[in-house]
Length: 219
Image (cartoon, rainbow, N blue to C red; front, side, top):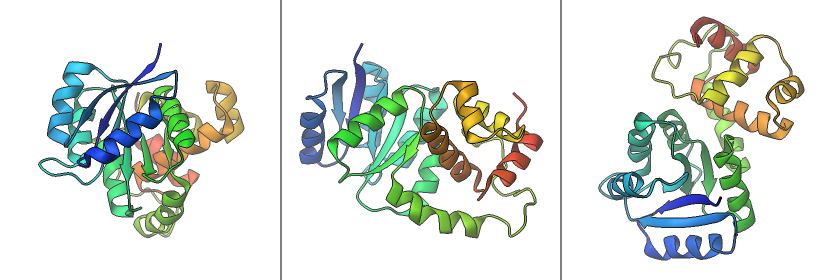
């Protein structure tokens, strides 16, 4: 069964371009297009897509706010943010809102398709260029010691079931390879998940993430 995708961008030319590229992929079906976040919420209810490719900056309702509304409805659809600029503040806001991916709009169409497949399969990802810019920001947000960071350790953090499973194993001292073996994931997929988890929790290393999990992760 094809992965159902909704494209959300305020520029019709970009929407059409992405749709044309994805139409070449036999396992991906573009089921609709929206010009802003508010329109996207209505179309999601009508079309039931698996993935929403969401622009960040849009009129009426931006991508972060729309993602927050979608996350409140449930785990489907998964949201992949698309942006022109690797703005670390927007990345953090999007991840906190529940986005499962964050890509630059100039990404190769093959990478975009693979990203859609990864997220549809329960994975998560952040564009490498964005990750490189995000890490210094996370270091500033994190405390200088391995003590538990309190500002981000709040119940509203939107962890997916897969992220919770990985976090539990990490807290038990599992390596990336052991986590992958336990959950039938590749090491690369585990690393992508951990990058997203660290960003959501605003921590900079495994130790701080493990401390957060032991204190706050209940189920």
